[in-house]
Structure formats: structure tokens, C-alpha cells
Image (cartoon, rainbow, N blue to C red; front, top):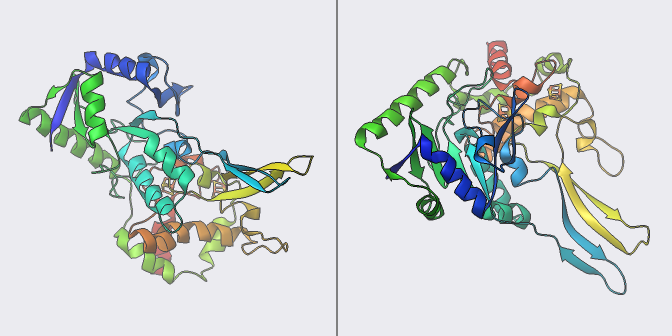
Length: 344
Ligand code: SF4
Ligand code: SF4
């Protein structure tokens, strides 16, 4: 693996050069929180954040998008709407890259989703290793402290400079054309290993009290437990835990028809399995009418159903759900540890 190094004093120039040539989005500080947004000058970009409120999934699966427009007269005509302008996403933590890698697999399987895949293809991802750990994060326990793929460049802050790992040929060209890197020395590469290990150690203070590979079996034996009723009794069915989760990707599809009854469009919007109407069908029946059944479904989805597909949990340990849930019942660490205790 070839590592490069950029001096911190040269980083602003790198970012400015990228802004001159590309649409650049990255993490910005706003009233004590961190949010992804458009970066218009290097000073706006924040790389020492702990966790953003909303994950970067919105760049590939927007909260709302038009899939196609149609007209029914004189003959049915359907025009796909594909938005895929090239852009750079600067400052994505490894756990969020792991989530994007999972989404890539999901949206490419079966009938591939051209809307997601086109946006993904148009993106250059510049990752950054975390320097801080959010209070509810447990990404180190989820094997998401580092990633080996899914980025074009990966930056690690080693003090006066950033080590840069090249993840793709596009990343290599981007770096060579827009920055002044030099090869990293062995000592600098070793520093990166030490820094990564220290931050992982801090993050490991939160995690499962048992091996996470046991979670699918634990869930297979827990379907009928009163436990779910108890846990879900405080649930507000607000769906926030779904919306802030980097691995939740469910959406609803709706046709909007103009008053002329000839033109219209099909749109899709984020949906969430905790919302009351998520499993409601056209006849009015709701397959998950109760809060407990919806709440249980979310954890089965993360720890069993998607586990079977991905051979890994559909949770990367960002802790966003735990931080955002008002009654504090969405945290996978607390939930699975309690479920395991209940099993004994
Ligand atoms: S678990 Fe928490 S965040 Fe999720 S729907 Fe219930 S109250 Fe809202
Ligand atoms: S379930 Fe919670 S901790 Fe896991 S990836 Fe989703 S938001 Fe992050």
C-alpha cells in the first residue's frame, strides 16, 4: 500500500483546488452539531468532527427524488429522471463508508437501481479517520474503525500533516493534480497505525458484552418474548432512528398526477419501518400494526434478515439512533445486551 503525505499547511490549497474544479460537499459545523453541506471555501470544511447528525446516504439516496415523468396522451410516454453530476464528498468516516459499501451491494443486486448507482458512480469519496468519538458510538466493536475499500482517498491526521491512502485510480489522479503530496516515510506510516489504534481503543469502551456473531441466533430465539412489548412501550413511532441510520434505505413510491390527468411523475421518499403506515397495504390492513412489532422488526432487520444477506450486521455502530431517540430506546448496544441478559 502506497501512502502519501500532505502538510496541513497545504490542505487549504488542496481543498480550494478541488472547489475550483468540482462540486465539493463535506462536513460543516453548525451550532454545536455537524452536518454535510456544500463547501464553498476551505475554512468551511471541518475534519475533526465526532459524528454528523445525518449520514452521507442522502447523496446517493436523496430524501425525495423523481424517478420518472410520464404523459398518458396521445400515447404513454415515460421519461426517466437521472441526476448524476460529478461531486466530491470530503470527510467521510470509515463507519459511514462501510455503510455505503453495504448500500452499494443492496442497490446493485436483483434489478439494479440505476438512480442510486449513477449517483454513486459520479461521487469521489475522500474519507477521514475520526479524531474524536461521539458519546454513543461503538463503531470499533462493529469492525468499522477502518475500511479497505469504498473510498478514493483516505486521510489520517497525524499532527502536522495528513497521511493519505490512495483507494482508486481516480483518487490518485485527484491527489496528483490538486495537491502537493510526497511519499510518507515508514515512521509516518507507523504513526498512522498508532493513532488508529488509540482512537479505536477509546471507541471500544462501548460495545456488546458478548460476541456479535451470536446476535442472529439470539434473535431467532426471541420472537415471542414479552421483552419487545416492554422495550417498545416508550416508542413514539417517530421514525427518527430510521432516518438518521446510514444503513436504513427503505423508501415509499408515489405517483403524483397533474390536474390535467395526462402528465405526472413518480417520486420516492425515505420511509421508516418504525412509522405506523410503513407496512400498511392498499386494502387498509397493516402487517405491523403495533409499536412492539415495528420496534422488533427494526432489530430483526439489522441483526438477522440483512445479516443473512450481507454476512454482517446492518449496523456500523455510528450511534446516531441512540443519540437521536428521545426516550432512549433505539441503541443497539443497550438493546442486544439486555436481550442477551433476558435470555439467560
Ligand atoms: S425507537 Fe426512538 S427514535 Fe425510533 S421510532 Fe421509537 S421513539 Fe422514535
Ligand atoms: S442502527 Fe443505529 S448505530 Fe447502527 S448504523 Fe444505524 S444509526 Fe448507526
